[in-house]
Image (cartoon, rainbow, N blue to C red):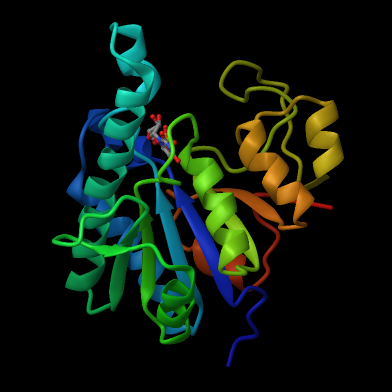
Length: 238
Ligand code: UDP
């Protein structure tokens, strides 16, 4: 049996990634591709928790720009993450996987409320736990949710799936000379002002010594390689 480097992971997926080429809503092809990647690691015995963003549907800041109350917009953003969580749940279930959506805002007809001990129990039983509705509080992000939930359920690592394959010295889309870090310390990320996560999310990981790996989720096989300890993406650690 393959040696696993990470046995319990928290996978952070952005809402935007779910929209694929369309740029809005949910692209079934992306859901399908992600589900297949996740299934492979579950079958290896990895315990998987997922936090999904809502940017493909609504962001609080977007509402504020058009004159909406910020808090109202943030709650709308949190509800958007539940829609995404349900979409990914449905896709994972079609692949025969056992899942639970746990929401930070109670909506018992559609999912369980978030209770830490129950989340841990689900993970122990091999169920994929999808955390919806962010932290349940306005002014936070789903990156912060990912850090917080990962710490709470004692995940080994936060895997931040993005469109780029790691953290670069500069924006690789704008600067052709930018190079990728294979590993970097929390302190260096601060000092170099690199954009890994928002500062609240990042600080939570730093203070609790929880490693983050930024990697390209759209490349098939990457998730397996990561849990086996392959050196892909950028590892941020203490
Ligand atoms: N949000 C919030 N509190 C949270 C998590 C999310 O208010 O704890 C809201 C916020 O408005 C945010 C939106 O939900 O803009 C969607 O989440 P996010 O922008 O993090 O999604 P992503 O960028 O990952 O798609």
